[in-house]
Image 1 (spheres, helix red, strand yellow):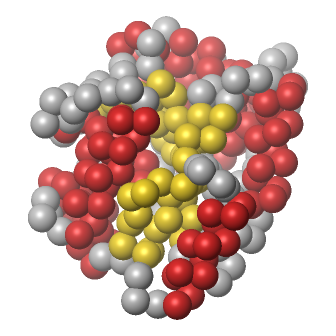
Image 2 (image 1 turned 180 degrees about the horizontal axis):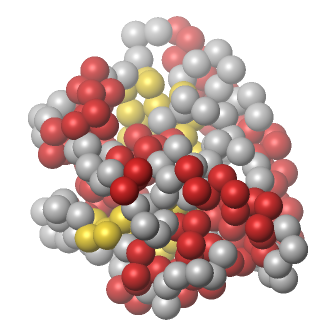
Length: 259
């Protein structure tokens, strides 16, 4: 059965979708079967794999409201071992539709149950908001991965996120835990970066990944070409960083890479 990891931070611009796209590709390239679930209305994880979100007939929205099976919506990509459950603007209406449903927090979990055995890892790219869609992502997951940018307001809002996780753990998903905290936009030359790293390690003792994601122009360019960074520029700093993260993540979960 797949290990399901929600990539979440309600603060925008922290590298959440960049991490979802590129970590999925790096883990897939190491021989693991990966499903990337996009539940963000922006659909950037979807377009990050070259999928035209405007032409989609069905998306994760249809899976969440029970209109479609995950297996009918999933798109197998051209990239090694990666399948995408896509998203677009349609999912913005799911919050309202879920309000009157029974077990509304578990609809994504129910939708993914039938494909769990087809994958080794499922990564869920959550929206940058604490609504019912994100709640569904958390309830469907074993752990959460929190990207944090090395900026002045890095820890802003994290108390709110951790409070939500504690509520989810208490009410809906008692086994959910923190997979790890990922430092993004890292520049070791800056004193501010070192200060942020120190603060984050105090806030999340023993939960900060050793791997970090540097500022990298090629990493910023890759989405416009609909390619994960390791296929756009394999030798770039961004590609190397996500490869290192994939190895660390798999090692933490007792896995070995094929490549």
